[in-house]
Image 1 (cartoon, rainbow, N blue to C red):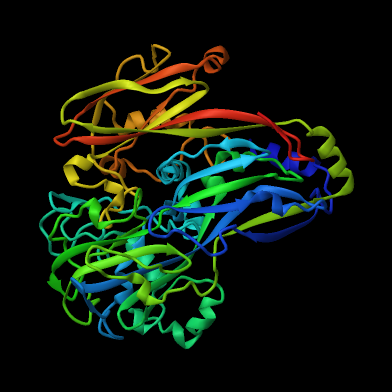
Image 2 (image 1 turned 180 degrees about the vertical axis):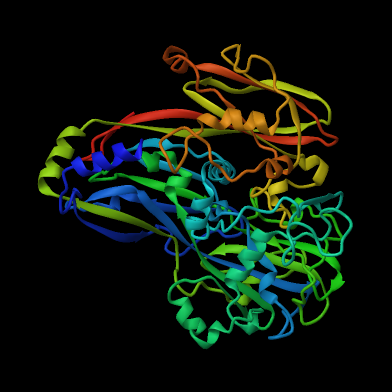
Length: 560
């Protein structure tokens, strides 16, 4: 639009003192149904009754809703069973041992949404992986600056700091230092640190006792900080480093249906969320710093059944009052339970209990419409169609090096929009799944794994006219139809640069360009590719599909 036309249209527009259809907007919260009880040594189920937020005076604005999750994560240093206290004030940085992986949504494995007795979003594992892909591909740099820290994503994980060894697998847990190139090093990428982890560590250190030199404890006490749920670190019962944080998880990031729900008087239903909670242990050479793993990590050292949502961070900073060989750590909702790690360490002995919240809360907004607007809105939307994208997860295990793969991944599926393919180093090669490792930032990062000859067949027809030797240019071309969270135009912005993508390969194939008859016809979907690597791989395939239902905004009844 030209400046002349814009000024003219602005001058011609009728001005009003107030154009808002709202009379008021309020915020409130409800507690989950768990009453402070969570499994905490594996996936933890949290249930929320959405029907309890009904108020006949207000409409619910579902897209604003978010979970506030009180997380408590604890570490203990030891020489096998003998505990070693964290370093004392002024002698090290004990708050640097642990950090959450990129995005608070890494805490969630799967979610089920039920409305009016109908399952709107069914449970599919690894919802954190597809959510992270959505955030990286849809957020802009300004989004990252504005809301990144709020959702636990202050920056994207550095790719220069990633390295691979046979013992550690992929490692990207280096804190404090330069993410581009270590000083005085002639070896590329040697000694590089992960800026995102450094930012995460800086967020929790509050005073000199936790390794922070800003002296903010002279302005506000730790108790005062706790009243607002601010992230913090402290040493409890002499031997335990304890972190408290309140994770903010926007439901619209997890569920496209929540983002697309209109103003609704009554939401009848339930939300069921499985959180990634548990504990793990790693072993290193004896030192008073966290160093490289000396004994290969195995699944037996962890109670996490899917994603380990934190990293144990390596640095040259002193964190122990003496030398230690074992780092034992766990992440829990609200409080530390009794744990049974392989070396007998019980993190429950820390006595750690979140100082602000006893359980998960759902915060939501409600609006009161002006009477005339409310009548118009309800009468026009007693049968409101709601469309949204959802996903189905398929796991392909152990595709051998330099071999081709072709198989059906979904049967009888309709409305396919696209497919996200994420390769990982095979668990048979590592002894564990990449995303379970506490030294790998996966699934905040992935792996530099190449797939060639990539294609989809839907209903026996190739989606791509020729199989792709997939490059970053292919990625940007394919993702151009992926919806954007900052604009209605289908135009990618994203946080994935070419350099970052080369070390964190994720593949997307757009499958939205079909006629309506084809989209609505159940079809089989076949994926084919060649593992162009020296190691076996496991592959996650997320099939993105469209769905819809009809909603009565007054009663909350649904036809699906």
